[in-house]
Amino acid sequence: MTINGSVALVTGAARGMGRATVDALLTAGASKVFAVDRAEAEYADERVIPLVIDVSDETALKDVFARAPEAIQVVVNCAGIYRFRDGLDISLDAWNESMRINLVAPFLIMKYASARLVDERLDGAFVNVASIAGKRGFSNQADYCAAKAGLIGLTRAAALDLAPHGITVNAVAPGTVDTPMMSSVVSDLMRTTGLSEAGQRGQLTKDIPIGRMQTAAEVAAAIAFLTSAPARAITGETLVVDGGLTRD
Image (cartoon, rainbow, N blue to C red):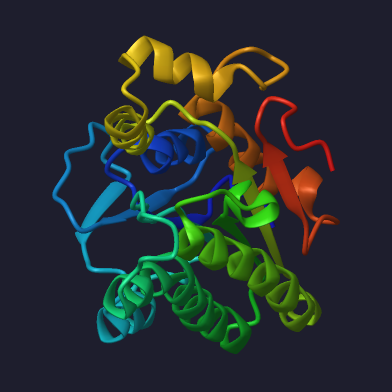
């Protein structure tokens, strides 16, 4: 398969990496993109179909794939939440919320997307947006790190389960990406460190070999590649997009 002419679905599509991914898939030739987000958003391209859905709602997700006029062959799980924590002082409710959005939702989406593709004997390409937090671990975000590490593991397992059906499953692990979510992270850190915004951003980028944050468009380009025809032999992999910080 190729993204050109295929129907795609992107979660967390209203802003940041999700919005950039919608644009990248349209540029690559997607015939239609279901843009899923909990907030309403407008898109200029008529090929985009906005869907206001809570990705933790299993029934709503199941209905999307069952009722779509055409099977959705390209899936990008970009929705995620991050909260700055105080060490391990995390309530069970907060922990479970992080797992529902960052890990359970991608599982459910791949479950229902793949069921229809297998039934109709169609191949596909799934990409999960993980994080270097799931590979390295960082302080004050144990729930986020655990969920993203789980997502990387889920990606590997799902790749094995779905390979016989012609469905690739990969992940990208962004680093410090200049998005609205990162702006909230910067604000949280500023309250702890007392640094200015410029100072805090400098702290976040000082160890990145390329010397800057990544852009949403750069991450989206990696995602689009993993859905393309030249990437059909790649599955179960996690592509790190962090400016050389992780290097593994």
